[in-house]
Amino acid sequence: MRRGATKQTPPHQLMRATNRSESDQGLDLSVDLAPNNHRHLWLANPVMIASGTFGYDGYGRGITEDMDLAQLGAVVPKTFTRRPREGNPEPRWFPQSYREASDAGDFLFLNAIGLTNPGIEAGLRDVTPGWSQWNANVVFSFASDSVEQFAEMAVMANQGTGFQAIELNLSCPNVADGSLFGHRATLTAQAVAAVRANTDLPILAKLAPNVPDITEIARAAVDAGADALTICNTMPAMRIDTQSRQPVLGNITGGLSGPGLRPISLALVYQVAKAVNVPIIGVGGILTGEHAAEYILAGASAVQIGSANLIRLSAPWQILSEFQDWIRRSGASSLHQLIGEVRQGLKV
Image (tube, rainbow, N blue to C red; front, side, top):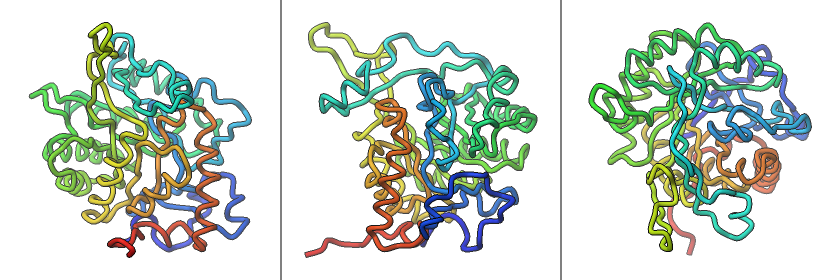
């Protein structure tokens, strides 16, 4: 079953004024990530920037004028929380430079940032209004400590400007019992339902990889009102410096991202695509256009670029170009011809 937008022509009034060079060449990469929502979320192409990796600060610092965000499908700036957070102790990254590490052939990336952010009030007042100038689809990401706080932040987001959808970061603990929202179907459903009851914006629910059965949680999120699912967040991980005998991260443990996460996330996308009938956004270790293609074949309707941005800020545009080339070589004329088209069994 193919996921994503319906086969109707994207209504002009629902699409951002994005670069359409690929359509001009007879290639339709458009996708609707909220086909069941009256607002819809039409993307000109499936390449998005993942939360926490947009520029040097997560909110676009370092993005230059020649990096036209309107050419991408969408941007997801860094997650906001209800109150400001300073984040985890340093060091927060390993290796300290993803660019230098990748040049040396080391792609085992870990981070433990701790959702450093100014809080949603300051975000909506000082940060999001400037997003409108990008002329791009922007998704507002937030995380909460309780179901009630999810509802409160949804109400606050309704008053914001500069974005067209919401992504729920469900990898934060519920203060009521310490469980991560994304680790239990009941908590996931409660969080999504609380947001759904307080906004009509499209909702993307971002799920965690380290659960016994992600399909159960995916179904709970969809049944509660999620328009699409982002799969997946980072995987808990750790490394130790054998010389100092100390963990390489100040928080001791962190999250695994980059190429090491890709096979894990890819398998989860494949599983969930068979279990739900909403668009899936695949994220994890996408460094090339062919990596993005793997996710599309597994059942994703779009992809988010994360660690690659920390290697080079121009990565999403390069990956989009490579992905367009792959589509052309495949002989397809549209993205939807390839979503979920992985072939079963081995060729012998």
